[in-house]
Image (cartoon, rainbow, N blue to C red; front, side):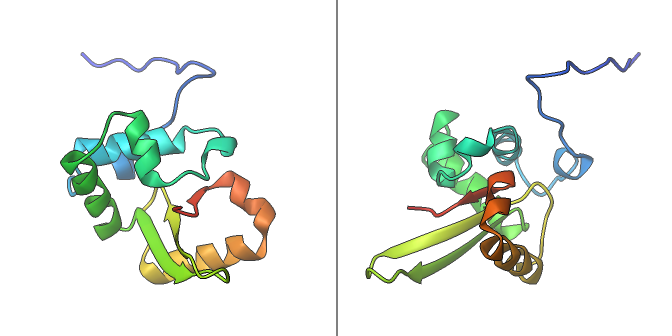
Length: 126
């Protein structure tokens, strides 16, 4: 018999049914979503690959997880050349799938209000 228990008041991350029940993404991708979702605001400016290394997720497992997250709308990336000539990748990581247009609208809104960036898992990808 399954029983519900009361979740602890701290030290846990709530997972949405959208993520848990999504059969299109593997367990590594789900773990990555939950890990990033549970990070403090101060740690969300790191590239996704660096965050995955904290989970010992590297090589092919990381590549597959990221590919699935990109394909199904959880991760969106934009590459561009900065004023100093270096290339940078901006990453938007969401815990719910977004279309490319929805992600661009969110990113544009976040760029306009730099204070809002502290509440999202956003990385400059460098």
